[in-house]
Image (cartoon, rainbow, N blue to C red; front, side, top):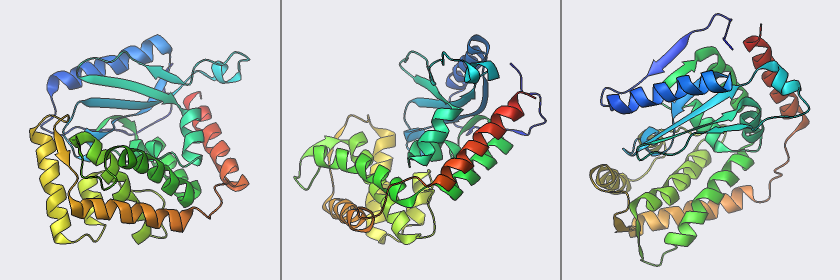
Length: 278
């Protein structure tokens, strides 16, 4: 299946990117297109590396199947997963799944749409999908998603107990807290920046706090993610405060998805499917 419409294709890969890993990812995406007969309008790097933390490679993509499969009584899986290797983790979601999760406040889709590392992207698709996110995403649902992600790690690994924890897990608690702070400071916004250093710059943090976080980022880049560290007291207080504020600000708000948002999502989905099969 081939995209027949005129499109502008974007690719954005850092100079420091491992050439072998890039070749493997490109080859894997080409194989997926051929074997599953899908269009992939968006393929990006997700997770730690795209946040600005050197790590292994997490390629994520959104795919669109042939029209007949959307009309069939026997729908196929809405995910495509490739077996993990030591360096690569490659999997993707059907567009329908991605749109539904976006409406539920799942921040993963938003992060894919704003990743700075792009293996291949139809710019019109990304622009229209991101515009949909800004129009229909519920701030309470987005906040609750970050709160759930962050508290799960915080309560399990930190919670002011002064215990050592894996460096990777520390950021799994810290980053959602910083995202919640960003939402608090930007009351008209609902799509949080993905790139962590950029996010920090927009959060009005004290200089000493930023220095501590920068030191942890450097440590993550230079050592194994399994290294044990202790959550600095200043960051522990920051995380606890932002989670508490988020509960106060968002717990009482309705998580219901509006009928208007559902209609807009339907329209976007139909438009993309039709565009791919002209």
